[in-house]
Every structure is written in C-alpha cells, then in structure tokens.
Amino acid sequence: MDSQPFADGAVATRPPLPVKIVIAGGFGVGKTTAVSQVSEIPVLTTEAPMTEVAADIDRTGHVPAKVTTTVALDFGCITIDEEIKLYLFGTPGQDRFGFMWRDLTEGALGALVIVDSRRLDDCYAAVDYFERADVPFVVAVNLFDGLLTHHLNDVRWALAVDEEIPIITFDARDRGSVLDALLTVLHRSLARVAG
Amino acid sequence: MTTWDGRASIDRLTYEHRDIVELCLRPNSVAEVAAHLHLHLGVARVVVADLVALGYLLVRQADHSATKEVHIIERVIRGLTAIR
Image (cartoon, rainbow over all chains, first blue to last red; front, side, top):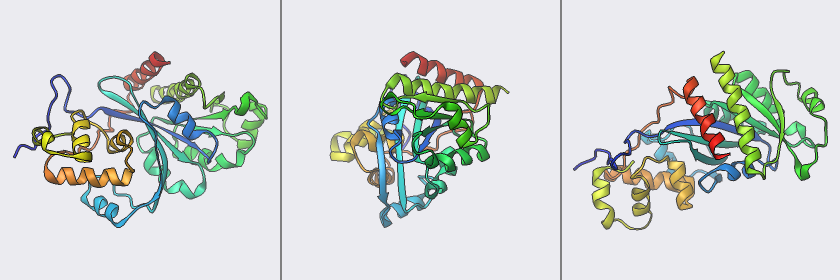
C-alpha cells in the first residue's frame, strides 16, 4: 500500500502556507457579501448543529479539537501565489459567538470589523475582543445605499476606539472596495510586525 | 492531499469519493473541499475522514509559524494589489 502523498509534477506536496484574515460583524452588516465578492470559491456558509458523527471525527485528531454545537461562519479563500493562500473567516460579532473568536483569530494576520453605522452596538463585542487580544484590526463602515449616516469621527467616539486604529468606509458589494479594506488590514499588520 | 494509492484508485471511486480525491491532487483544505462540492462542512469532514481511513488521502496540519513574517505579509499585499 502506498500512502505517500502524490506529487503532481512541479506542484509541491507541501500544503500552501495559510494566512488568515478574520471578518467580524453582526448579522446583516454585509459580512457574507464582502467575503463572497473576493473569494475565488463559492462561499461556505455554515449554521448547523453538529451530529454524533462529527463528534467522532473530532476525536480522530484530524480537525482542531473544538467541540461546538453550532457553527456559524463564512469561509472564503484567495490564492496569492503557488505557496500562499489567504483564507477569510467571517464570524458574527455577537457575544454569544465569542467562544469561536479565539480559535479563529489564532495566527490571524488581522481583522476587519464591519459596522453598520445605524446599528453600532452590534460590533462592540468584536472591537473589544480584538483590542484585548492584540490583533491588528480595522473598523470598516459599510455604506448602505452609498450613504454615511454618521460622521466617521462620531463612529470613532461611539466605539471608543483608539486614534491609531483606522476607521474606513467601504461598500461590501464592490469587489475593489473590499480588497482595499483587506489591504488596509494588511498594512496595519505589516506596521505592527515591522514595529 | 491525495496519496499515490488514492490516485491509482480514482477510476474505481464514485461520486463524492472520486470528486474529493481528484480535488486533492493539489493540497486543499477540508473547508475548500466542502465549498467546491457544495457539501455541508460536517459532511465533507466525515467523507474526508473515510478517505483517510482508506489510505487515499493524507491530512496534514498546516504550518502557521511563518505567517507573521514581514516578507509573507508583503507578498500577500502584492498578491491582493495585483488582482485589485
């Protein structure tokens, strides 16, 4: 029996280096829309109870050993080059999903917190979490109908985020706009790593 | 990631087993497999585990150690700028 990995010519058998950006925000702020605009695969959206069968898998150690009864996340990916893949994990920003954030942010380059300026309170928990976890993040106000309902300074004041944390506006339905937002996150991670 | 055994057996496999083994000729994550084949993530995990037990697939833990290095982040920035 030959259980060695099959190597397809020039393709390395090494899995691509995964880099990760977390996208947080309450339901309906445009998280799924943003991920699906830039992902090269159909976005995987899960919200379902796990079965006993899945619990069996967990014990085999093939997947991270987290026992969850409910999973709710959007998953997308972008191939950067032969060796690097960028994974996007969208997660709801409500407190009750907080237990997932630690796993999701482990090793993440940074986070994009999407905000609907009409419902700011949805994102308090996420902002608070990333601040404490010391994950570089950017607050992105989704422009619904192209309208900014509050001045960005007011948003900053309401969320009580530091001057150094960028607050930007973007349109989750626009691919370029989402990529720009991700680039803002990456520049922030870079500044953090480079010191 | 498909094994040599898995590749040799592709013609004998059917349905999802065959699709997954074909997809994994290049390394893929379980979540990507699920997304490509429109399977529920839980279902994909079970089927992938079956294929691992049969010796057709290998599961490897990705290496996260290098992800926060400056040159990696710069490459990601260049990559995203290129598709912008």
